[in-house]
Image (cartoon, rainbow, N blue to C red; front, side, top):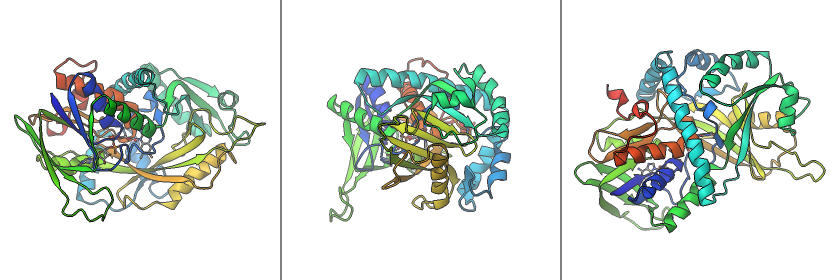
Length: 432
Ligand SMILES: Cc1cc2nc3c(=O)[nH]c(=O)nc-3n(C[C@H](O)[C@H](O)[C@H](O)COP(=O)(O)OP(=O)(O)OC[C@H]3O[C@@H](n4cnc5c(N)ncnc54)[C@H](O)[C@@H]3O)c2cc1C
């Protein structure tokens, strides 16, 4: 089949790879000039099946409300909600009840397990170097964090996640660079977890796909999809350099047998052209990436792999000779405005655990938008409109779920029975 993939983030690129492996002729459309330039640009890098979970969970509503006025709150409302956000919040709080949560969580974890093994196989097969490391250590600063974590351990056991509850001494053996003057009650070690540079992975995979015949139409903003016996795709071609005088912007129009929308935060607008409504909200977060200092006498500077500070919900990841700190969740507000308090929290957590490890000159400060559906799982599968498929809405776990989601949608397109039950991911689940 001739298939268009809309969106060249990590989800679109892995989807293109899965479809190309199945023998389809694939064209990828991307509105920006490079791939992985939106949410897949500088995420925390964790591929941690045990931590892939719906944001809509029992107790979440209370947790969010109690944090609203805290300075270091992990979750914030940046503005009073408008109509669309209010509708999303209503759906989200309804999904926070215990009914359905465990099934949705189990479905996401199964997809994440599958995705992790596919990511490993693909990177080995294609010799992709994505600055990866193995293992994640969840730091529990005090009794409160330990007590809260204990209640989640049964869920990890039920999900067959390999983990070990360890004392502070063991934490420092696993991560020798940890500041030993910081109070640390315990940790959860998840050895079968991966951390890696999502953007680097996506860029390398794109080059390899291009060499194998996948077409990439960069600077192409798709603005209309018309489903039918042939799916019609309409895009505007942007000038390479904004304001370079190529005016008016040319339009292109192509016919395909199918299109897979992997457009994340751009998906709701695009789908409106088909009258389909996708309840997706952008949940903003931040990361800071810094070079690690080199000390010959002290090689264990910074983390060895991934750390999660459970109190602040801040991740610290080693990516080659750099360290990335990421966290915060903001609903609403200006996508371009960097909130200094959120960035300060990232520096504070990094300095708590690895003081002096990173050079603070020329940091890469980034704000990204998690494409979040109200009940948690991404939307993967048929839309009910001829030739139109979705693989989008991966929220805070798109890197962890990309390779598995790509295989799932490719199997569904081919009419093959997928490895996993696709029902929890149905793009039409809100219409029932
Ligand atoms: C602070 C932060 C930390 C995170 N940490 C992790 C983590 O540790 N692990 C993890 O698994 N996930 C993490 N995530 C989430 C993860 O980054 C996302 O789920 C993932 O990148 C989504 O990938 P995507 O390809 O769907 O979206 P994107 O990377 O945003 O790609 C979508 C692409 O579609 C393009 N597009 C949109 N509309 C159109 C259109 N009309 N025409 C053409 N192109 C279009 C966009 O330009 C974009 O390139 C984090 C996110 C944030 C913000």
